[in-house]
Amino acid sequence: LPWTGPGTSTQDGTTFTLARTHGLLWPIRKDLEEDGTPYRMVRGTSPWQSRAGEAYRTFTQLLGGEVVPLGAFRDAVKALPSGAVGRGIKEQIVQYAGPQDIDLRLAEAALHNSLEGVRAAFRDAPYFRRIEHQHGTRGLMRTPQLQLGTIHAAKGKEADTVNLITSWARLPAAALQHPEGRQSEACVAYVGATRHRSQLNLIPDLPGIAYPFP
Image (cartoon, helix red, strand yellow):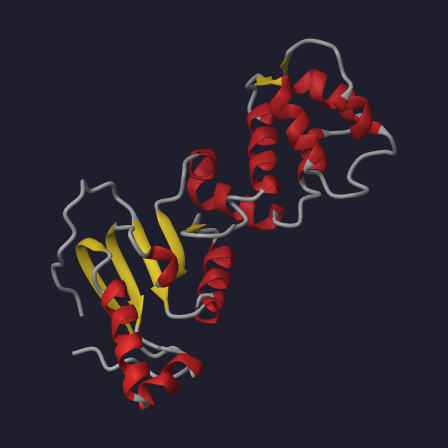
């Protein structure tokens, strides 16, 4: 159910998927991660936005033959989960006083391990590999255009396209039974329906009670 909306700022190719509650977003996040689709959160942290995501990208750059600053390499090593490298190696790298630019050879020497194997230790590594498979290394490196969030998180922000989930979940929908609740939820619905610069798509059929959009 698309319609042209009131957004006025410069278009930038972004898309918001918005919902009344975080719970309504979890199935969408799961599907995106299983499909290898890059996304970030309007507010909060997605795997792509995490320290592990930044570290994975740093290691990917090294594996691709790029040189990274020592500080970026240190941060990537700090983000490794416990047990990913041998005892004391993280501490050694934090104190490392060698070249300020790190390449693959230096990285693997410092880690005493294959960088490919170390990179695979991140919890979200399977998702990142799916992104690379679907979109290439560029898809992993560039900032995702798709953002997910609650309507409240998107207040004051805009995207070119907004996919607005019409389900209001059960608890917020219960407020619609009372005059004060209807007024409050109408304000939330207005925010959700006015975040788009170009197109609004209403997404039905998710669990819960649908908001009565016109």
